[in-house]
Length: 612
Image (cartoon, rainbow, N blue to C red; front, side, top):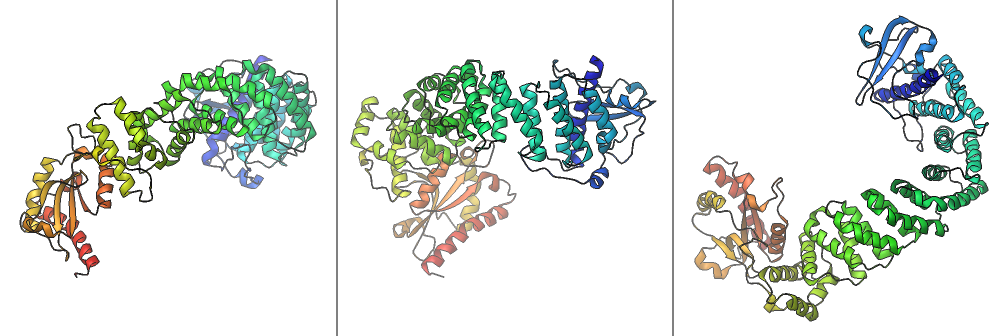
């Protein structure tokens, strides 16, 4: 009997494997809630894994490995029952073991032979499978039938096709005994809903059996999560049976909350959200308490789901906040940025001002600002502003300075930073202020002046401005690459007809210009002696390797910010990246390259002034 049961479970696994293997040949629909692609019997019969039809009397042995599946035909005549003698996997109640590399018959096996997939669903095969399943315990029988029905869904069989009808009749028969375990009931309900929708007779019987199980309080915590998921799939607000079942399930789950694992708790909260169970306040409070106990076990995506559900359901728990304060700071550095944004949004929705969380978020943002999207940045900064939270003065400046590199300007915080009170507080912490802090404040001031012309708040006093951004630590700009300049100097002089340019020029804002060329009002290049008559300035940016990210050709944030500001100040920028210039082999190519970069800019300026 054990051998027969094992072989039948293995046959279900083999059917599933064949369905997966056939996905390259058939358009399969695996989603249980989505519409199923149907096929006629004629269309389906024409599809095989390989074009050859196997001998009916041969035994098929399926080998399943992690990456592929082999179908071996053995040249031994056997009875029809040998179709079920597959060594694919152990019974579901036993721990799974790895499949052997070779089948039992591999020493005598012929080369791989094709199997017609429909042959697995011929009526005689289904009849024999059902007859053998009849001797199984009801729960095992239901699991086997659900597996075969799921294979029908994968293969797109019509609900009215003879194999499917036979399997569904068997399901109704086993359901009539009312002794199926909850997990198998949920499996049957999902598959039946995919085949026939909510009005399926099997779905009705599953709900009836489930109603009895819930009333008798035989649903375990792990099964409760599955039941909630099924009710989400079959939800009908007008059904008194489902309303009563949910109410009873809430009560039983509430008593077993202390046994829920992190993943089960997440699934239940998601189901409550989809079922719009805002009135189940007592259950949600218990779930929130439990979340605080198992918070460390949550994955990032599970925390996002839990907090999102609690936000929409309007539940706030101090114990959960305490757990977040204890465990979140240590995992922020490696976590998904979406988690950080969700935490901040949760704090904002619940009007929860948590200094440990906010400080950790601000510090993480400064160190990893480039990982965040615009929406994620907005959620974090808005939460701090609306909850009237200011990080430590130095941390706030770092946070805002990172924002301008991302072209994001939280003006409400800018006004606070430029206020006399904040500047006095900053000086109290750091006396005197170091050049790095003054440089950050100056760049913040330039951003509000050049890029946020609508900003009407306080400005940074002049005595806080730095004269030059150049520094030993290269915090605000990377100095010109001297090797690249030596390569450009000769071709540039030849192009301009002399040294009609200057190098390492300091602009009035403090930025260093690599090479500056001045034009008069007619667009002609001026010699150095006539720079007093300058009408327009061209800044050549000789971008060496140190101005780019080490693994890409993207500029560093500080260099991108510098160029934005120079453009806003009226400079015409001509960029000469090292990876373009170093590819040029001769001086003629270098001169031509510089001509193609510089003179279109000059021509554009002449056209703008009407000189051409």
